[in-house]
Amino acid sequence: MSFTGGEPLVRKDAALIIEKLASLPIELAITTNGVIVDKFIDTFKKIELKKINVSLDILNNVHILLEPVGTILKRSIQYILVNEGFEVKISCVLIKDFNEHEIIYFIVLIKNCAVQIRFIEFTSFDGNNRNLEKLVSTEEVWQQVYNKYDTSSYSRLNDVPNDTAKNIQIRGYKGTFAVIGSVVTNPFCDSCNRIRLTVNG
Image (cartoon, rainbow, N blue to C red; front, side, top):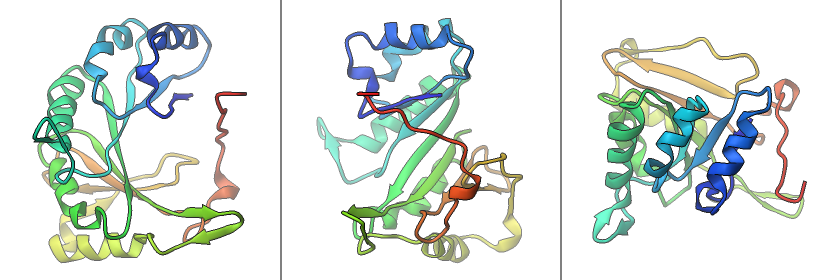
């Protein structure tokens, strides 16, 4: 089970909810933007939560207090989460004309940081219609990888059952990356075993 949002850690009772969920016979993970995650390290350790998914769509173009958000979060991820022994995944939703130019920068991030980057195809919905104008396809991701890396320098990893990600290891890199297609380009409903529970049940 993944505790997600919005940003779940901004709730005043977030620690209490996490501890209550941890009392159930489930494997618990959390999805967060990572900005205040350092305040919950003790809670995570107390309930033995290991899996943390960080939502990070851009590294260099947005600033907080004159410092790039990506720089702040890279420090948070590398020096707080990884060094504390958490299993960290960074989810990057790719959007045309917004962040597709940073794909290789994200991959370079895993050279010295033992996390997994997950590139996710973006698809917006307009009623029953799908708007593909902002889609950065899996093929476009692979084209950038082909242009940067020799094919002999990386290899496919065994995918976890029911996982939608195609996982890649680059030789000499501490972390890995994965590409997750959308239901438009890579339908996966027949193998999906997940359910999303909304805040109103």
